[in-house]
Image 1 (cartoon, rainbow, N blue to C red):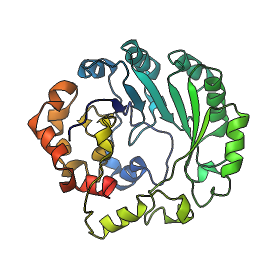
Image 2: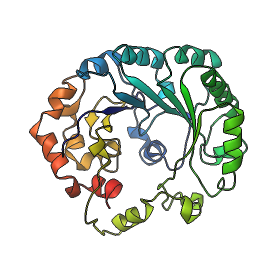
Image 3: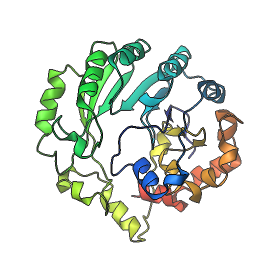
Image 4: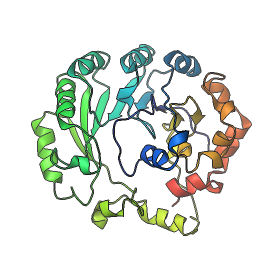
Length: 299
């Protein structure tokens, strides 16, 4: 299996204002604060690396560690990507950017693009998980996006504190004029976040298989998310990997993309060159052998 490029996942920056307890960024900084470094993608290096036709390619701006809206020139990056035909999907919490910043951003977006706001609860309680989130600036952002051609989505992770607020959030989503309300079932419950775990019918379907993985029970098969060709990932540090899970610090240095990260630096190569490497094809052909694939895509 070798995935044709149908989509690209970019992490424009690893900067963020939030301290979500289950986030890889929060955990890395808490455990190794002296080793943390801020990074933001250089747009020109990115454009040179993406040596493929971008028409009909959906580029998702999200990432493992940062919120894309804190990239120093996100509007410029999006403008350049769209000039080559890409469709843009932004996933953000939406806190702390001024209304004027959002007004400039939405000028780069069209009806095929989307902005998804990750708000896990209602204004009165969503900061229990999205620590440091700011509802007034989020609401300003939503209002600007709703008035623009792009689609606006509310993404809601059910937690123990908000599972009874889903209908309220749906109503608020409708009242704000947003296009869609999406429930995003999470698997991210462990010893540090178990108190956030909602009712069993509201957790992600992969949670039980991940508990098996932690007990060294190997999945009989892997059903890879990357086979849809939409997960090709570029980190804020400027490195390619097959998916964002591969770049999580728990797994990154256990696979070839982390062990040989300099070989996957976007400033030194192109996407086409990387995807033609024998080592990359071998990785995709042996997914069941890799711990990150067992953990995220084990059946």
